[in-house]
Image (cartoon, rainbow, N blue to C red; front, side, top):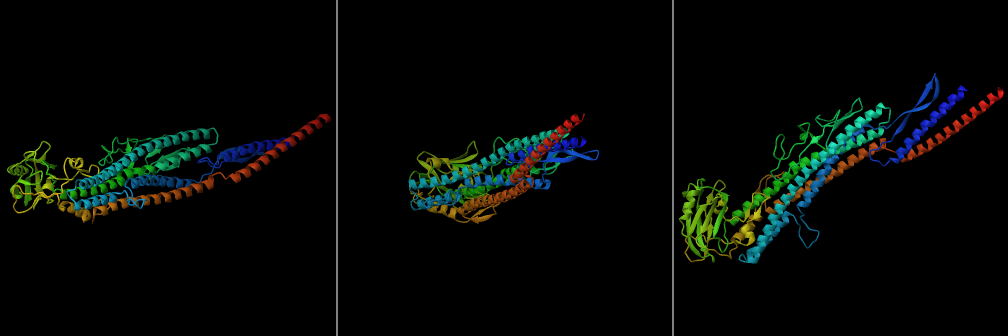
Length: 592
């Protein structure tokens, strides 16, 4: 009888264990395509009573994950997160800058270099007929297209910086969700383990949360003796230990070229903090790392290059436009420079200031020896001494020179004047006949009255003869001197300072604009190649981990078939033992 009891115990334990194994195998097959799911196995051991084997029991359900391989995958996931963000943003930057060529052979590209070339073409047409109103309008329109593109590109860069800042905030929120999930799973895993239940599925979920976290920021981690997964920043700031430590971040309300991040109190971008500690510098990989680099370095570098182009263009074009005047001459000239009566005036050489009628005929003039005046106030007094002219410094600190009577205007020839440390011509120093306004790419613009048509393009030059006679024409609207000078300025050698990673260089404006576009295109190409490489590396680690701990459908299907046969065999054995029990009982009853 005891032998049959033992046999029955063995058969029932085998049946029970096989049933659990079938359930595990079925779950493996069902979840084979579930992200992060690992192959589970029912751990089985033999039971022995008084030295006699009495069957088997399932002690738990577990999965085997290579910890070193998982750590490599987590690191590769961080690298991929950074590469993906960089690639996406630089693709947008490249599109923002336009193309240097068009898909259509009949049209040109849309880059800054192409827009500069279009302005040069308009100037070339105007040079043949400088007094043509339509050609002047075309030239002004082409220049406006250039300044508008610079503004729009600058605005686009700042918008991308604002987007990156918002993406940082969104990523911080996602990180906090992952940290809380890991902390919650830690608690569940300890609870299930204490109850003797399997924690394998919970550990899978925790590893998925860890990988998602790593895609946004680099982390270090280890599993503590109590089963907790503890997570830290690269330099050891706790993110998850006995509890989750959420990050804090406040995106900027408004982003401009002057918005920056600095550790500590700042009116610009805030720091990413945990428990009050700024950890921005500790984030060296993952999506957030790339976003911070894009926002604080890559995109500001692009802005610096645009500003260098815009500032040099403004300075060079205005230096030429201040050599000329429009016909009819303007009634009033107002400086862009801000001065006061006491502003020191360091200058040498001579400037000619004249009053002319609408046809360009001389009314009066005077050549001023600029070395005679110590202050701007002295200069104002001298200009007021010229017949038909008045000068003053208005409430905004701008020098104004006006002709008496609406029928006349003011014209200036800079002659040999040299003002200030940069030795600018008189009109250029004060900005009395500027064609462009603004301080950089964000606000460069064609002077509003010229753009609106209220004032003409300064294409004429005041006669520089040693003496002038009242009534004679001293402004020639048919002269191409100023237009040719503008063309020479654009195509000649201009010195550009080092800006945003581009070295100092000398060349034409078109060449510099092309180098800016090429620089962006090169960075975009490098980002794309880096993304592909990181994607391949991450995919390789993921595949290796899947091969090591993932579900093999063929193996699981074969295993399930074997287990089903074992289950059937155990069932048959139980039936045989039950039959033997029945026969034995019958025999005992008959014998009694």
